[in-house]
Image (cartoon, rainbow over all chains, first blue to last red; front, side, top):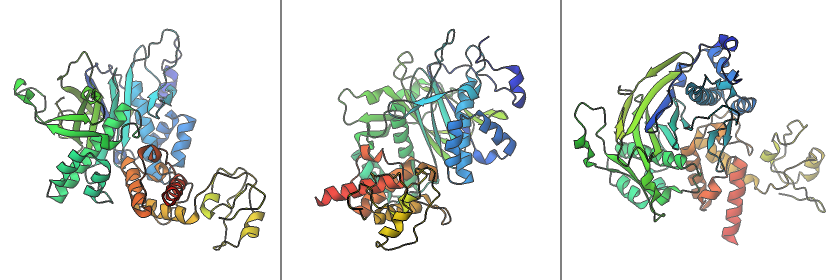
Length: 312
Length: 137
């Protein structure tokens, strides 16, 4: 018997996670937890049981209960999310191992055992004090970033943009006269830039923020989608690299959302060769309390598309 | 920062000594404020030290202040040289804001490859001192 299979007798503490098909190569899945909805200390203890000793130690080093809880939920979300995508049998979230790639990007370390074909799953997480999110794709790398939509910067926005963003982006932000709108657009741009760098997975020193521009572009694609389709009609998001002549930035598809009315979320996914240049990002979003409740929120008010060609 | 003649051990800034890296020793708090505390400090000096520490106490203090302000750390929570930004709750935007605050405070430019390696207050302070040193060289 495959020892990685979830043994029935160990599952007494938890109801099993609802198993899910892997996302198809053109799909992106997004899972999020709202920490304020997770208050049950027995449940938090159960999550703690899922973590490796090393992860538990990292959690304990966080300063303060809220930060500890956030760190705990982040690891629990990653483990339970990946474990949902069963291949041969249900994966025990506790037995997943993680490592970092050469540049520090976390990835799953699948064990090389007979008869086990690891799913080509990619994931990326992001968290704020009020939300923890995990994005999942198959075959292609993914980067996500979330920020509270009320987030304020300590520094002046234009000074910050002049220091870190590209000239075009500074121009766009400077042109916004309403300070509140400017602040919102700044945060949105920040999440997109972060998501792109995280998707590339080479660390931000490999792709300094100034070396690429993210902008919105009106697309003529919208007229090809029938009115009843679930494809968003927002502007497409384009990444342009100012450094690379071959412009690999064309290979990345970006999406910008407002999630749960409280957060901006950016997702950046490498385009799948099979899916084609202009295929929309097929996105499914769940709000979850692992082992307790999963709610698919795609197409509801909880997921507002602000940019990118997305099909929910 | 004072050095013991003929030895490679240097006097540690007050904050840097409060570190868990020193094994088997209870936390030692230096009561002194001034620098003429060499002999007082030596008696309590652990045998294993981070010899590479080159950050000035005033740099560490300034970094702590900037970090504390950026992350809105409550006054009862300590922020010391050993403090990791992530453990104080900094996300990537906070970290970049902190670096920008440090650049403005110290008149330096921190390149991305240097910024990427900063994870503690001490890392930042050492980099600042190094960049300031290069600036005046």
